[in-house]
Length: 314
Image (cartoon, rainbow, N blue to C red):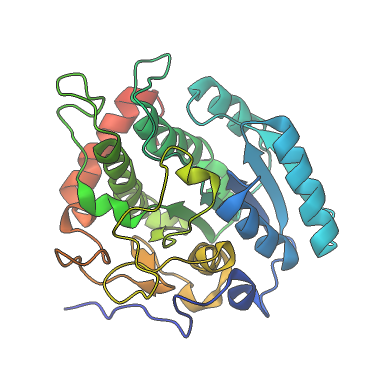
């Protein structure tokens, strides 16, 4: 039986504020990685505006504290907390997760880096794969009991249309055998984000944990693009042939939808864009989701690789 595609009244130009309108998150607890700026900040602000207790996890303590203070002032919600975590440092991830107590209702795996020069973690892992996927894998798995205790938790994984540029390189994820390519490394990490959602949703369905991935759209001007000098030629402001350029408020809308909206209650293991379940990718059009990013076999294989690389299982 063909599953009906999930759609909502929202679209590419909807904002996080519009999506969260009327939603009550009182007594819900949320974590937003990379919540000190850009999409993460807007996502955290929207969740706080609906009454959620929000923890902003960021590498720099001053940035996390400043963001928490600003969001508290803007929303009138004093339950906004800063926390320090470096996703590229598995020890930092472990410290953050071990300090968490009580249930966790919403986890937004938002932080990420893009097209960086070749760099490696102390464990020898390629930095984009380590930050965008492995760190979030370790964090989410370590927080499994907290998510389970929420009885209806949601995990939101921010991917990218860039995943269509390449699958996970299972035989050489760290580019040790072939020359490093920053865009192929980025694509791999973003494909891994989707595959993680596919496998986690399968493993945790009976635990009432929904896990979905998304493409926020292209938001030019955030810190994510610090390593590129200008928007790629494929940027399409009209949205007719590719993913349109959005404001930060519009870019955060799909994250907020998956994190909080009753419209997607019970939805899990899917990939969204523009507040809708994405259509299959069509070559030449930078929209949709690639088959390899939803493949259950690839998802299981990635999980096994991630356990080996992080030492965290669940």
